[in-house]
Length: 357
Image (tube, rainbow, N blue to C red; front, side, top):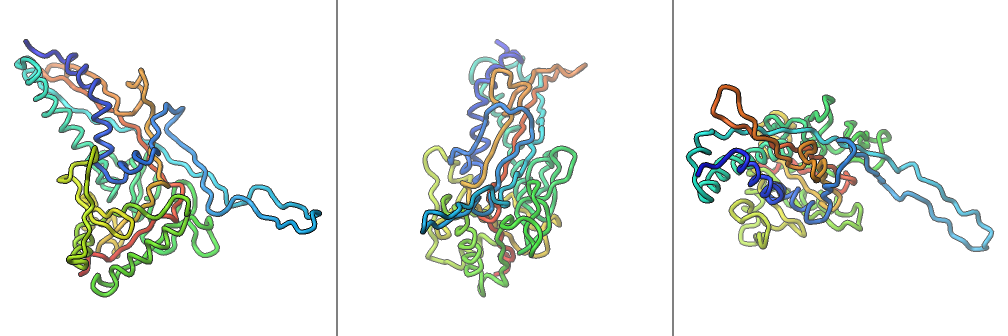
């Protein structure tokens, strides 16, 4: 008995929650954010989210010795509002009517699911990963990028990538101007170090950046995740030699063959193929290798809704099937509106130059 386009849509809708969870888990940053409980799938009024950014203590302290002291108080000027926009991304894929007509039973349905929607999700994820790591995700240029040397455009307006590849910057991140000398917002700048060559000062520069970021926002712990390009990652492993501590991927996390890592102090350090240092989108220093150091409890991920009207929302909503005019083809669409941001820029770091042995 043939499988109708609507039956395939029903199967996809039932599988979409597990598909979307798998989509998030296959990137180490998004997976850790979700594990930390910082992924919000509540329905939102709009794609733009504002959030509080406090770069230092939001108040003052008064010592009382006589009891007649006037207690200083009030809101300090270091409390700010950042913002991020979730772009609307639609991934369309086609299923030949011939495949549906010739299908028979659950085995054929499973084959169709594997050949079309699962491959579509894999390709969609790769594009998002490329955008996040480098800023060159095909068709998803509105999604945020960690690459602070380039921009992304979620709503038609260019925004700067999050992590800057310099010690100081006058760029605007999440709507807030980075600290540069006496200008910008105090404390709103990621940590940065550059490696001369890995043999000379590779690990020492990584430690400097790691501890500088970990000391910020102490209640959220140390930097717990690092992702780097292939050359930086391999140079680190070769520098350690037999001291390498492998990160084991267990339980419901991404399979070991998908993600392999090692330890750097308290952080899991992963090779990220989506970081393409040959791209001119990176600074000259980053083209010689780049490592992102992330304190994941300071990061938040959100999607546009997860309810009965998902078709109008964007948490991996499925639309279709739509018959392509004059063709024996049915189109399905995956709708995603997702945003990612950090509330503590200075709790994260960039190390460049790690590609030189």
